[in-house]
Image (cartoon, rainbow, N blue to C red; front, side, top):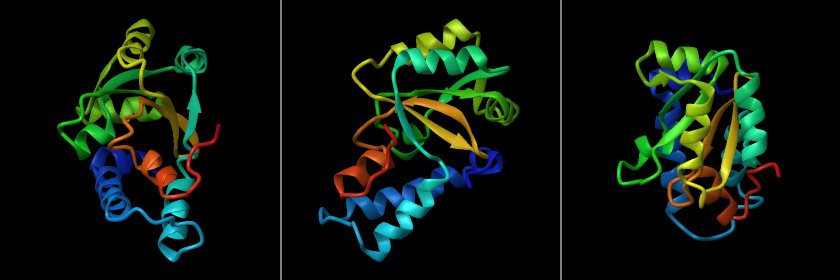
Length: 156
């Protein structure tokens, strides 16, 4: 299961870089393969889900702490143009304490997500609770690369 410590320490980014390198190394379908199974298992605890702005707004409104910071995929690929993610509750507090995100008013968090309307919104679980919202970048998102390689990633 993805943990707060994984995000704060950079382990989540390092793991995502490894997964992305594997996914970008070929084009064949990975369904039913050992590597496909390992990737699917590794991503399962995140339970990534595609949502719309209304659902993201509800999550932000219900959160006790909200922060805006650099997206994981931006750390993987500094050339990526989409830069901000919204962190909620315990993850927001941990990222703020680590200096990796800034506290945000709820309207400011919504504004950060509105900046990139051409990219799908993805929410991810950290420690069993949806606490990360980002505008996914198809070029650097592990989930989208998994889908291209035949592995179901996103709950829709």
